[in-house]
Image 1 (cartoon, rainbow, N blue to C red):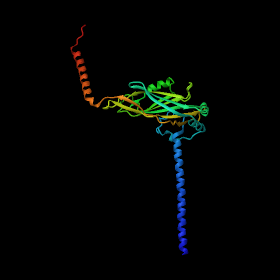
Image 2 (spheres, helix red, strand yellow; image 1 turned 90 degrees about the vertical axis):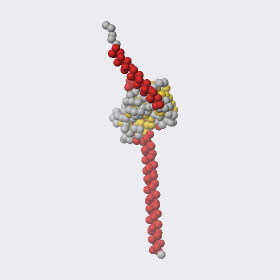
Image 3 (spheres, rainbow, N blue to C red; image 1 turned 135 degrees about the vertical axis):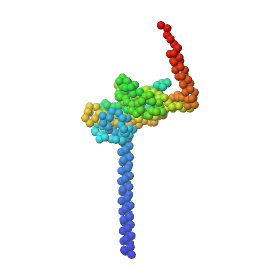
Image 4 (cartoon, rainbow, N blue to C red; image 1 turned 180 degrees about the vertical axis):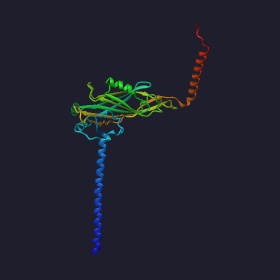
Length: 288
């Protein structure tokens, strides 16, 4: 009887030990997973990148560029604090102009506190706006002229830069614009980006128009400490704003039901023009 009791007690002790050990392992794994989630979330909102990285959209990992954090320096860590003390609650977007050439207007206003003013005095900071375009395009030569006139600090177009392709054959393009976060005007924290856009030839549609949707841009604050050359790093932080409505551009297009009539008329017109040229060249004799 004693032997049976001792044997059962031994088995119960082993089971209790295994359950206790398993609970510890589960807690450790859960805590480790939670830490990873928080760490990954921090990676998605801010990061330190080398100053040699001129454009964010040029990184092959974009839009997940902030997931690759390099070894940060003290100056970069302090520049990341600007994204915490400078808030941008208001964002307004509109499409202005008429016809096939219009402007996408982005207006935002940052809330400046005493701490943010102190931070900004010691840093070079930029607002970076990245727009993804489909069905419309931004002319890189036009953007470069705006940079030369110092409207923007810098601007570049990535992706499909062929301006002649119709919408059906083109791919998306990405436009990155940099503006000084602290202009010398009185409205120093009111930023306005005027992005000129042009229509690509849309595909045929029975409705008579094609709807191009321009989604909300990716906005970043990029800062680096003044007077640092060796080991220079940008502190890049995502600007979190309330989501805005998608900008829609209704572009007139041809109706597929009219393609036969249009093609016939075009062919006949071209044929008549060609015959007229042949007729004139044969029977016209200029008098000397």
